[in-house]
Image 1 (cartoon, rainbow, N blue to C red):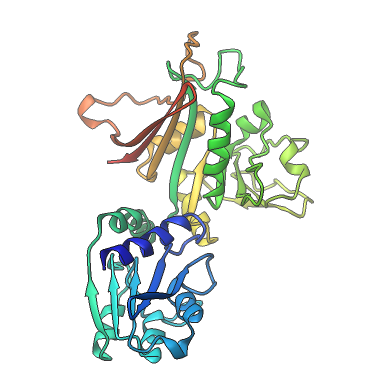
Image 2: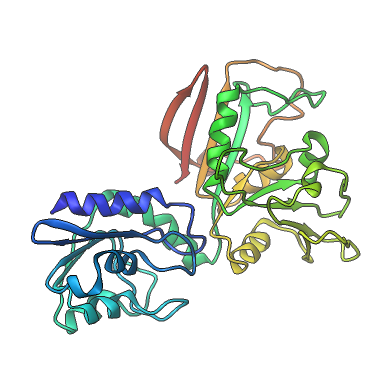
Length: 348
């Protein structure tokens, strides 16, 4: 039984990062000891995992079966009808799920139970880890945010002469492309646009190119940058300059009175961006790391000492905090990428 639930959670983990503001969900239907249907929620607005599993098995074959789901089936009408209602209609006898959906006012658990379906909640640590950031994101109405930094072991993103290509090795670049693939948008600053001229694409076969988001309070934009000359993904420019305009069809100007982290993230969430990656220089990176609005911090360290005066130290603030008031992280995972180290942290 646990094995089937594990498989449903694995399906959900495989599509993490594809569902925008919706949670990734996996579902498996078992009858007479055999898997007859499985599904995963692939994209926001498309069929949910439970419906995909029912469709694969054939609605006429699922009566009396058991469904294993990574997350409690929904009970509300959104872009799609409630999964709990469809489960009831098809005659599935039992539903076992691994995480409660604490964001919904009405529960699918109760709806199914009242209709005669046997429902079991089996808490699972993998599922709880998977959905906690989603629950927090939905409650705050801001995306799940990951800050990514590539630096020397003394914390520099570039030399004092702004030389930055390349501090980390080629295998790190490949890992970053994979990281981008799992996000809806990439945030960078106009300074990075001017100094590095990045494309911010994934450069991999069948890769998902996230929307590029450029932050520029002043509205001083280098329009000959290469990302303005490809249409691989849309571009949003957030600015405090109400006069900034463009004729480029894939570029949208978003004017905010104050381009602060919270206002930008809330606007992106309203636009349907559920997961965003910050890839920027010290100024933008420090603003996000100083906020309480990031979930993940991924730090790639190259075994190099750059030295200098630290003009491009990745974390810089005017405020000096006491040691007992510092922003704290916990290390989730570390790995070696050739000779470089990848450290995955979460906000405590």
